[in-house]
Length: 305
Image (cartoon, rainbow, N blue to C red; front, top):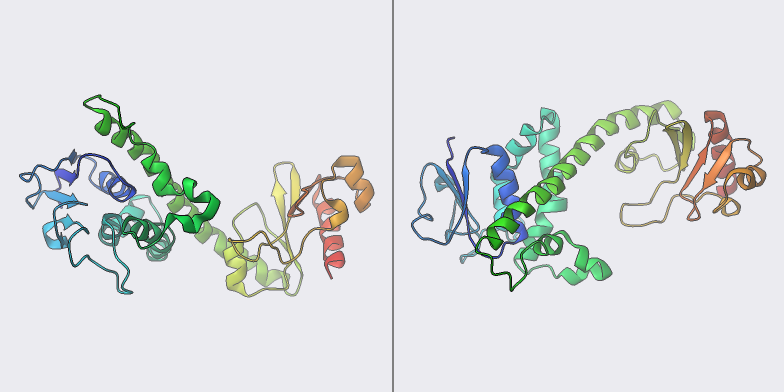
């Protein structure tokens, strides 16, 4: 597919066409990105991709707009924004271009769509209210990206263009870091599931290094595991396991008498030589050696009963 022009609307930018541009500029790096409302540019052509403008959704003609009636909808009835349409048609190719293993492409495409793309679609279409984020509503990604637009009274003739392309590189980091995170979890999953098999009924899981373990633990249906330990630099860490990514509640907290203690005070409270630190929120503790962290882990299990 030869694409010479990526065409979206000019003026104030929003998260959906900005994030769409991230995907398309990676896949078609030689194409010129044109921001315009000139109707001559919006005529479909074999070397164009037109998105968030154009008045229709026709993938065969390379037009991916969502403002028309009826608007394009997902199989579950929820509306697409331009980002959702671009991700549907180009997301797998984008993931593959990041050198993600082929077996992980479809799962990552689906997870990213659900976690990242769908909320953008719903917010852009007014189906989801930003207030659902509560006190964090100002920090939602669409709002942060919108804040990169120029000030209303910036009279520079290139203000919109300059702000858009500056925001593009920032938006790229958000997408690519998220994809790398999903890919990392896929790699970690294999290590964690194998480690769970080895520990049997133990309530302590040792991993060879720090890695995202929550989703794999939930998948393995190993509720008996209360704590995870692994090396971190020259030290070892003892970690709680959150009930989900949406809460700070854990399967078990570290002992309350350890909370906020360090060094000699923590050694005295635990009776473990080499104990270094316990967070005041009791979700992580640190020790100097593997032996010391295992002693602390066993004690934490006993006190959690």
